[in-house]
Image (cartoon, helix red, strand yellow):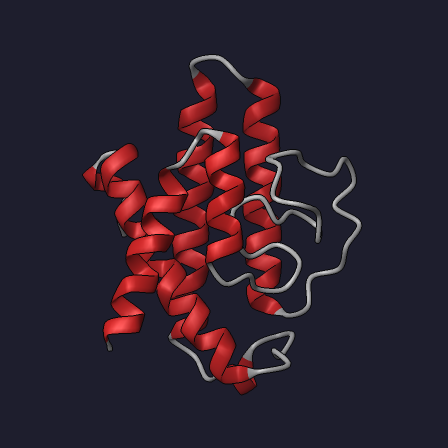
Length: 146
């Protein structure tokens, strides 16, 4: 139980990190899921904060596909930039929260693309949901934490 709480706190703290060297350090401390699940791990790349242009790495399952879509939303938000960037990132976070909630409400056997390790997928999805809800509440306003 204590390890789970610590992991969730680390995930939340790292989700808030904008300074790239610290984000890279966080990414090495926290678990990574598939090709897209963790800050800086976009398409299996290094935790540099750089996005691949084509997102060619395949998602390993339905959970990783949600993280891929989230990374694509962040990439699009950064292209827009300016005052709209944060708004678009918050919307990407909200869509991820909705997707995670949906996956966690059904059996893993019902996922469109089943995970290679169901226990790991469920644990990561649960932690990510808690982390992103907290992130959205603090950075995007309370109405965003579904």
